[in-house]
Image (cartoon, rainbow, N blue to C red; front, side):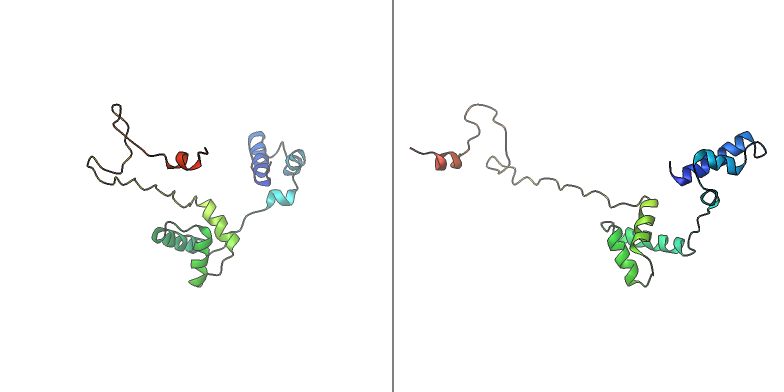
Amino acid sequence: MSPERKRCTAQDVRRRLGPDRVSERRACQVLGQSRSTQRYAKRRPTDEAKILAEMRRIARRRPRWGSPRIYDALRKRGWKANHKRIERLWREEGMQVPEKHKKRRITLGGSENSCVRRRAARPNHVWSYDFVEDRTEKR
């Protein structure tokens, strides 16, 4: 169990049973978590919202770019950010590169002599040559 989940569990136990019945010390002891970890509060940098806004702006203009290229673009624009931080923000925001769409196959002509593969509708309707068989056959 992660420290964050243990932290939430200890708080939930104390809230349900009452802080006067279960101390923080006892809840942490039962869960196997140190009290300093229980009291830890995350501190987010103040510029994180600005970096996220810039990341979104770049990603809208360049949807095929992933987090490494976004990181390079941010560095070129003067942002002082670690690549691991950019990757973390990228994942937390659920940003991802959209899948490539396969191109539709172009039909090469629509006449009777077109290059499109076709199924035989009757005997002797579609013919093909088998060059490999003739070349590899030994006599």
